[in-house]
Image (cartoon, rainbow over all chains, first blue to last red):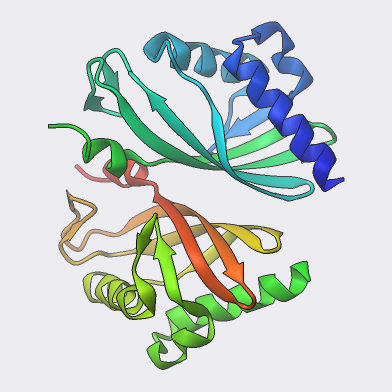
Length: 128
Length: 128
């Protein structure tokens, strides 16, 4: 059961990395919430599409994975070049490395809630 | 085993909330690392003592707990009044609410590594 949810999660990240938005509904619930806001699948997809517009070379990599069904927590690592402003910082095409610590709650095989924190301090430390 | 580690973790947070620094070594390994830096128990204790100096009413509350031994992930919620500057922000005694998403790796019953991200964006949103 732990392995099953972890496998689903890895397939979800692969879907994001391929920007295979038509497959997103296989992994994300119609009524998904993100940091307490009801985004629904359509809003969640818009958020991700916007992320890739702002960061064309965005790729999700797992650094740590902790799974206790129906919840899963991941520390994701990013190494990318946001085009312009990112999290209110003028990154402007600089290469930055940072982490995101994120929790997911699943209903069945689909993500129903996400609680995410991105390490803004780490990015600030890489800017002049 | 999951319940055991979760119980140890709750006792660790209780130790922090009581500022019972003489008990910290029951929960934290001598060679503890924090966000990739080797702090050791003495440096980890100094970091926590400084946190409570800067935020006298600091209390650690569990919002989410995900446990897969030997790792545990927690979303902690804080509602407190940092005295002056906090994470580079001039909070100056204002009351702020924010989360920390944090991963722990245990060796036996002790924390050996910590990977923490604090939601700085949430705090910024609460300042004028």
